[in-house]
Image (cartoon, rainbow, N blue to C red; front, side, top):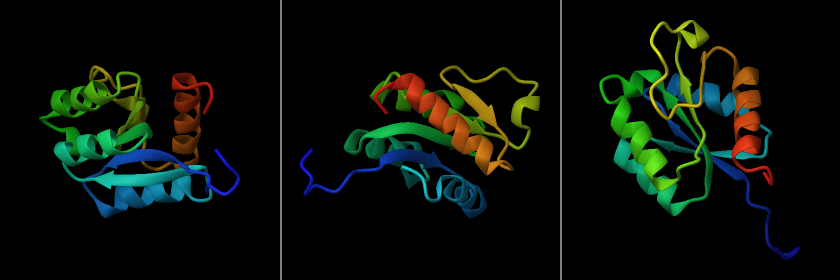
Amino acid sequence: MSSSEPERPFRILCLACSAQRLSVLQTALKNSQYSILSASTTDHAVALCVANVVVAAVVDAEFMQGQEWPVVKSLKGVRLNLPIILVDPRGTNREDPLPEGVDAVLSPCSPAELRNKIDELVKKADPAA
């Protein structure tokens, strides 16, 4: 990359049902190396993932209810090693097992924890990141 090109931030794909959940993610990633691409449907999320370099996806658990398989499988179909974080009000106290393909589950109440987990998973998926 030449010095005249602006440095591109890493993009995080966010599938959220509510503006509140999107706001939590924006707060967590404020002043970081990440920018947010938001989607409200699986098709839109896949299109964004195809058209952009996305380093991780954060998916609202409410968004996935009744359709866990297509959301995660569709994203993993675009990029097999894409880290996917499920944001669930139950956090790590979930009684259900994680859906296949989900790498971590976090509570929406902790922006710092969310940012740390994204950093960890992005570095694990792509050590050059």
